[in-house]
Length: 491
Image (cartoon, rainbow, N blue to C red; front, side):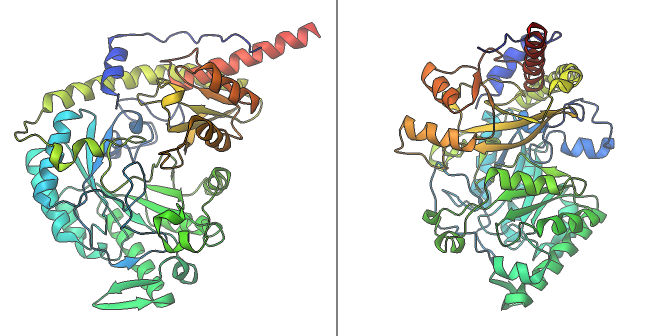
């Protein structure tokens, strides 16, 4: 029988919490962020750029939504993990879109989403090709949106090959965030990932192509950093090809000023039709991914909350409302609702203060973890345990030890597209992805799945619904320690 949970005092249920439930429908070390004034290790100018950006701040991803518009179909390189022709509406994978838009259509869609989703803070262009190579469409889209929605941040993703040609325009357009995909700095390794590039009107292959791509990527990173643009570097972890090498990539991008390094797993389902998928190249396990991420500790700061979003994603990270905003569903007349976004951001500022105070209490209890312990959390945002187990398609993973409680990643449990699978198969998948996690925290759970988890050695806890994640974990650790102490005294 589980030990009773010891409540952490100081958590007030207020009108803000109710507002959060309504608005957030649809992490970080608890001591490092959460204040509206910004974390102690970040200058105010940088904090202002990232505090509402769900991709550049682990803390912000609990509160804010992003959207991507698919306006740039052309690409100047071929990656062995990419196939932009495949599309499943329930799938999350870079390059995938259901609709390709003109800049005018995209601007109309952004206005509709902004009016409907007050959490929206960022517009990104991430393909389905390359936003820097298809620059005319990218720039036209940003120009149209910034005229109507000046409070929405702009960011773009690129493979980096064409990026150095547009640095001045990026800075002039007040684009504060750019993502560059860099999978290798060794051309011999890069040639195994990118078979060809198109550069200076010529297709180039092999080590020559990989060398040019590497040099242009690092040049773009240095130029953007010098101009004050925050750069996130994405790297796809490909077992047997660049898994060990990514430590060197991490060092190289840190030396050139990368703000974040996002090491994400290869998606290689053969159904997607990619070269790697069709030739049997596997993706990494969750444990393999975490091992490489942990090995990069001390280098460039790591992003661990990436969802590998579609090029037409809409909503909070971990959800996608893109199918709610297809062109045929947009209203004829669209009126912006800036007051709703302003109210939501004011709520977040107050909620951050509460969460920071609660997280401080959690830090005091973190030493109750005798060994590193993982927790899988069902959440739909706001940094709280607020999702029914049966509705979770992914779990946020937290680790607790004597150094604190911190977000370390997420694990999907829907096999990317579960259409046609039954509950038994779904539970098999969940147990598989949580095989090293002893606790699941959720708002509610049925007796059937609770027993299935227990049989697999996983304890489901649903008595801490609506609590902050960090304080709920601290409560569990304290309770387990008290239970151990009582048992020791009775021995």
